[in-house]
Image 1 (tube, rainbow, N blue to C red):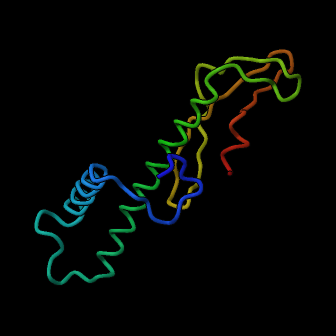
Image 2: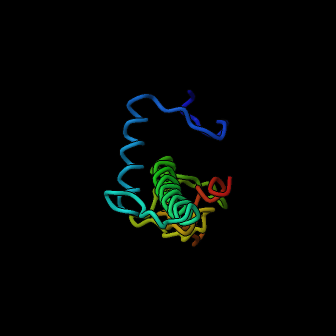
Length: 131
């Protein structure tokens, strides 16, 4: 399986070791939602499904945040100002960017740059976030 998920089918193929960890995560989340014994007898499937979607959205947001942080590492070196082309290092403090994903809100730490000659801030990763 390719390490690049942009062109993958709807379902991920996991190695046996990854599958084991995934199953552990699922068991932990199920226990958190309904306890050690699972859902009580009078629980409806709609309630089970609602919890599954809540847990799935939580995992989705965590994956989005992790991958965005890894993506931001590509912008840890000097970047050219979009106006003058002069290269500048990133600011010490990233810009906090609230973002609404399909699974709910997250906050990205977006690399921020400052061009003193142009007196402007710029964010080179901004073009990639919407893709």
